Length: 387
Image (cartoon, rainbow, N blue to C red):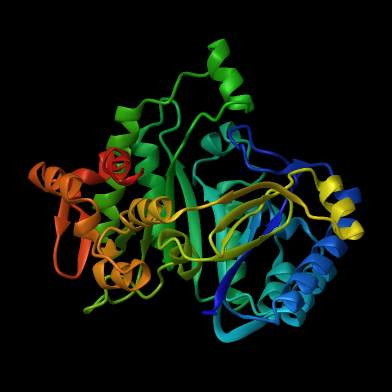
């Protein structure tokens, strides 16, 4: 078995943001101890049942992992190492909210082997941060970044949002300039989406907030592409930029290795309420309710809310759809051939010919990838490869 990737979902936040539809809960501090114990049992028992396989990436996400106390984090990592063989050069990432971290938590994470941080800054404008329901200010975000550097983190990602209702291009430019000035290794930029069932969706429906403008979002995205290129960030995935020399490698040094597992449609295990996994041809999702997850783990019961067997046609289509998100690397023809025993161009000859004629994809002996003009309409390209 090749080395695996592991995603661990921490379903707690200090306060839930109005745009968020992730499986997270605020005000559940009373569940922390029981949840961490259940999660620890789950991780260790699963790893031991699999004969302690090797792991190349770990991602602690949520929610907000840094709402947990240091002893909780220590318990999670102790069982992670007990159940799995974490490779010495594994990328181990933890998400962190600038409003829920201090020097001690950063030092704890670093001591536990976390070597990459992903911090949800979202904006360097205090008015935008208030609209987004964030619990930190722009100053606190910069302070948190400096603390992370002092704790020894040399690989930091910052998340930002654009396309807010009536967002000022000048404010977005200032946020980008401040982000660039901090010199992080990685940046993730996401367009604000109005998700059904969120407070933001209710605000839009009542007319309290205007619907985000996709044309404005496209303009802000283009601004980011231009500014980050000038700052020597490599745009390696539709929503992600990283530093690092390229040479002959289509991926920069600080590309997110865990996320590459997703974009290459490779196997990973998911732990915690609402986590997803994809392993041995089956996609699974864990039950979302924290109490139910704890109960089922303690009882030794299955805790899947969804199980879906992925047939070969769908796996190939999803591999194309996800791989095309990689701007320079695209879908590597040799990797596809080794995995499926066929050439990419033999599976979708008509779709590839049509997309090439429209200037939306580039096909070489090494790879199939989007052209620059296709990035803003990438979903239209992806749809051509799904059965």
